[in-house]
Image 1 (cartoon, rainbow, N blue to C red):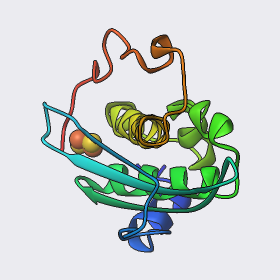
Image 2: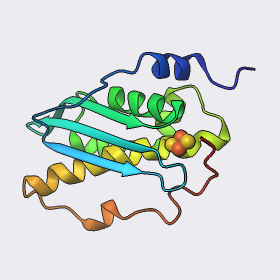
Image 3: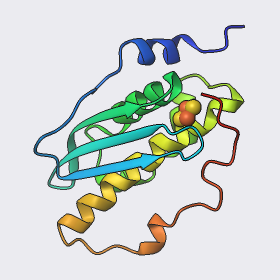
Image 4: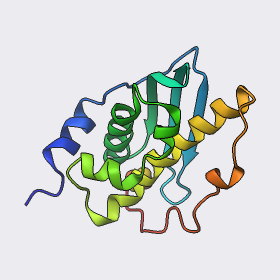
Amino acid sequence: MALYSDKVMDHFRNPRNLGKLDDADGIGEVGNAKCGDIMRMYIKVDDGIITDVKFNTFGCGSAIATSSMATELIKGKPVEEALELSNKAVVEALDGLPTHKIHCSVLAEEAVRAAVKDYYDKNGIAYDPEMFKESDDPHGESCEA
Ligand code: FES
């Protein structure tokens, strides 16, 4: 069996929503200290709905594929729903990732959450800080670039 699914290869080769939003309402930047990969997510929010989203990822193919898929999964959705996006949902939508690449999908989840947090902060929207607490071991798995 191929190491990467057709969907992963497709999103890696033709990333959706690649780029930058100059008028973003929220920007989230996260990185993985082990591999040095960086992901930046931009969201445009209108009436609580994510009307546009773009990303820039300086990282491995899986990080590019997962961020691309994450943008597709949150576009057109309420911000609260985007907050619930799990890395597992991103991996499932991509028809799986090799175990040692699961941490790349964690980066995508974190980038979305960071962008929503930035949106909340910039707009004075109250939230429970617990919602944005980092998990104990966000990049726990080995990171082989
Ligand atoms: Fe670091 Fe994929 S995010 S290797």
